Amino acid sequence: MQLPLPGNAAHRYPLKFALAVMLAVSATVFLIATLKLPGLVIALALTAAAWLMFNSRPASSEQIALRNSIRLSAEDLQDVIIEFQDFELSEDTEAIADRTLHRPALLDLDCASPEIEAFHFDLAGARRFLRRLNTRLQFSSVTNDELETLLKVTDKRAAELKDSWLLARKAALALGTDYNRRKNQD
Image (tube, rainbow, N blue to C red; front, side, top):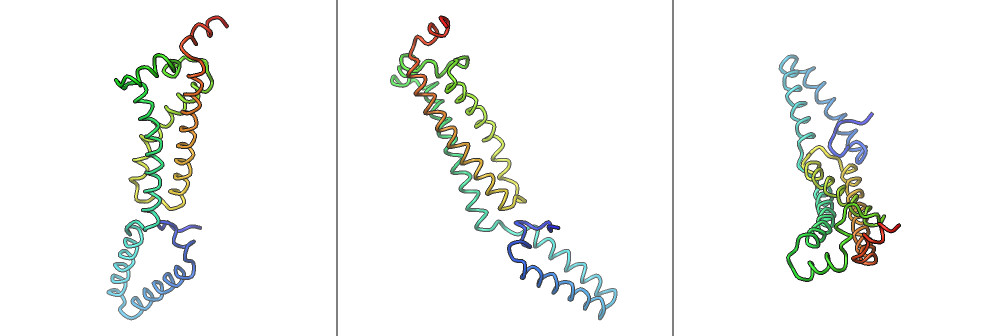
């Protein structure tokens, strides 16, 4: 049975945790035995204070580091999204030439290229993931294990989106401007 403590302290420090529990129980028994009803009231107050202390402790340095790493991976996702938005919406002459003369298929959501379809799918997933990520990081009750899993997922999504973006750009360049005519002839 796991106790509901932040970061599951029972698993990280089993001897210290066992000693703390034994000390608390013995102090409670001593207070009740010597002071009777006032001892019970004091023991309940101390138990409540200890419970609050365990449940509302500030984030550990490990949690802060994990949250920062997750934010950095999220920035990698955001960088690819911004690159695509620049490609899609920029008024820069190079961007306009790139999206009209070299890679128009990259903006076509109905393009039959598997690489371009995969990129648009990954892009939509990354946008949804980022919307939910900040909410998830706001929870103070998230354990270190959950944060490590979230970091792995964020790193994986960032790498997949970056690879997908590069493959889609390469595929769109290979298709050129007449990809619609080739698609209609097939």
